[in-house]
Length: 268
Image (cartoon, rainbow, N blue to C red; front, side, top):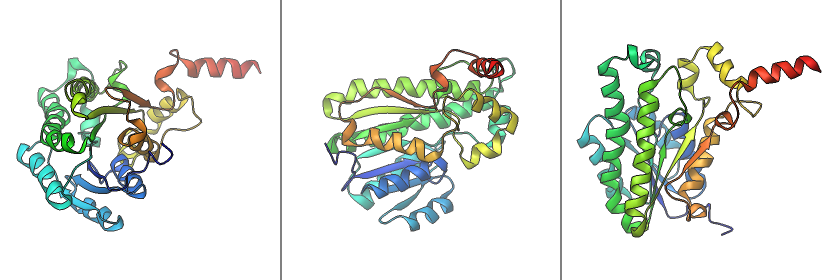
């Protein structure tokens, strides 16, 4: 198992592969020997990253378009001849979406429907298209979810609940396809310092999350990429149907730890 984290000879398809977490994952998997297909609605950004990575392929993707998702898998198979890892990382999470995704009482139906269309329906179609090929390679699926799918919050009700649905989809695929040698897991990041997050979240709210983080800093995209790469590798061959939380410990402690820190710091 010494080289079990290596990905030599394997092909990984990453949705949202030109973004923060997706890009970091594409770089890491390439460094470990994989060939990667970088699928993104931002096709020019995907192309730019693909030129940096040996053997990489840029693929157009619109998760609201079923034909686009199926073409993504077909193009990856046509180019590489196999598929070993599907990393469903893309999600509807731009600044405008985040600002309007609040509580259920004030939720716009159109925003709710679009969030589910991209995050849940899109992920399902990608899995459906990839599973026959993953069965052949005894490959696996890694879904990016969120620690918000495991906790209640006063904002992002649509995003959080869509990610919770993907957790259940993860378990369903693990249960139905494990006997065929296919694993399916999820990674649940906390607030991660991607370019999109820096743009979408006000510094005051970011500081509130930092105060509840058990580490001395928020996670970077590379931290999440390490978790994805582990689950995608043979080192995790006995792990399936699980959610690996990578949030700096935010979800692991009693509520209000920031207040306790301040209290005890004042006593010193």
